[in-house]
Length: 286
Length: 226
Image (cartoon, rainbow over all chains, first blue to last red; front, top):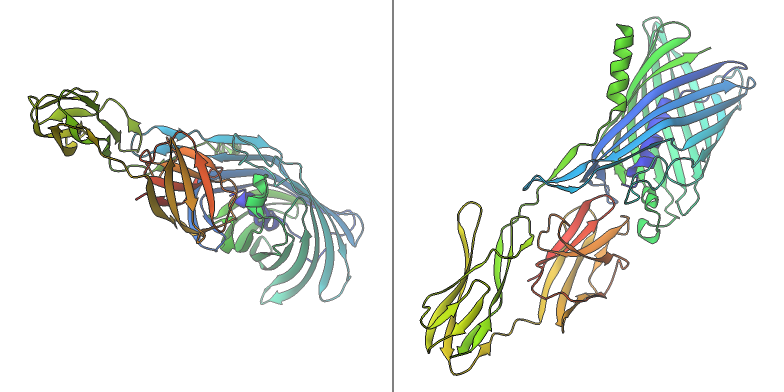
């Protein structure tokens, strides 16, 4: 619901779209991914963590994700929903067939994250990296006649994250695992957050196929306003929590080009949509 | 071929259209006589009134047919205006023919006598607010008629979740929808006793109090007004 859903929904999918972990790009190297992410939700986790129905909300993001190695240790990252669409369905009487409430939609740019990742280790067994991310509230946080359509949450995030990753052989092939923890300082009455995640991947078919499993969690410090205390409906994203599972597969056509597809679903949560989201994209690396 | 695929894919992804969510908003039709007399003095008139709400809880006027069991004792026109003619007892009934042909009827005995005795309607009704979701919402309430106004007293055992934005309270005859409901206002108290004052609303005009998250169209709970 206020974006319920949206903010955290964006979050756990934007994370799923990313790459990197504890490994910064080498100087001059990069990775760009254009993808479409979407979620059509008619149920959500309540503040008690139980699932309730809601008026169907559709969210569609066409996103750009890019990493570029400024040095061998320092990587610049951007995640930007270049086109974001949010809509609510019509509410129709099952008795008369009349439209009780007209559906609405907004289109625009979404909140954009810019990050700097710094590799703390180089050539060691475990790759450690620290990342600072600024979440720029350039999306629309109160669209529609009720102010309930958003392409952003209207608040400025400052996230500090620490990643630790390791690669390892796995039979004839190889795999990797990465864990991270982060602290997200939020403004405009939003509660701060503790973020954590684990992912593991394996390369198959002569490194043509990469299969990835991600588990991502967010816990709220509950030090912000409640939804009822704020006139800003986007505050409803506040105090949202989830633990999600987001598997993804990527197919490399060659050393540069590839496609990826994934799904994300909240296994548990509070104030977040309960329906799965999907993403497909094409990436280029050099 | 490849271009066709990409165009189809883009069309699919970008043509996210607004669809329809069907709300199960059917309720039982109700008919209630809201102004009634136990007896009417011979030679005098009395205006009976009734309220009919249809299968989506909307109040419909002009649907009620008034009948007297003995027009020689008491006659009544289709506006509910009864004329007492001579002493005796009749049955006054209000009827509405529903879409499926069944008849909804309310009736009462009326005596034509020496005096007119109007039946006093209750001045207070009450109920219990209960959640219909997995959000906290509970509490007792009483609605008092004060002149032409209503005072809704929410008891001190009330509590509601503050996790929802735009939680509003309504009076309605359809607990499944805010269509045709009277919006009282946004909920600002989430625990303990408080009151709402509503002008120019009759005590018998509505049968439910409804809590609804307005921005996200989610019913949170309701309470039948007994």
